Amino acid sequence: MKRLIAFAFAFTAAAAFAADDEKDFKPLFNGKDTAGWHLRNEKGHNSWTVDGGVLKNTVNKGEHGTDIVSDAKFWNFTVRYEYQVPDGSNSGFYLRGRHEIQILGDYAGGKTAKGGNGAIYNLKEPSEFASKPAGEWQTVEATMIDNKITVILNGKKIHDAVECNAGTGSHLDNNVKEPGAFFLQGDHGTVWFRNIRVKELPKTVAK
Image (tube, rainbow, N blue to C red):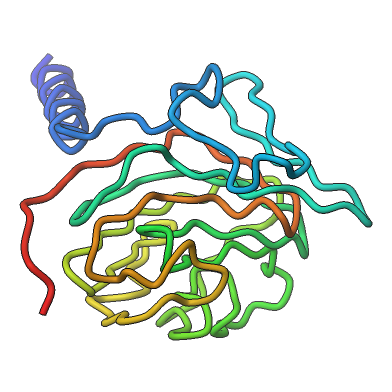
């Protein structure tokens, strides 16, 4: 009986911790449609669909999709999201619309790179290889405070307060001292997202 009570207490504590860990996070994707988002190029091919709580970008060989951008803009924040990417497929999750956390189906390669999965694209490769195989959901927690980015990929901290003072390519603008939107790269390859949510952090002024 004591063991049962102890187990129940531990389970309850873990559940409470998990709930507390999500406190103040708000969904950016409602799981039903693309409300709160818009196409970067309104005249582009809309490759985005929603199915079963998953935001899907499907780009067939020889086609080009379109990036999708959040209506809301943010300064300091922690954003959490999950994604699934086929082998060799390429996408990205942009912080403030300027700084890309690379998404790449590179599990077979087994090596980090500035253009590899989890990289701050073309700026800094992950501190360790943390990619999962195609067909598995990968989890990201990215925090941006002023011009510094910290990223946890699949439970491993791969970037720790990395200074990022410029756009990393394909960015929406160069206004790095202003709030910005999130955007999901859709013009390269197939990728799926779910459970995208954000927690705004106290405002500071970038120097």
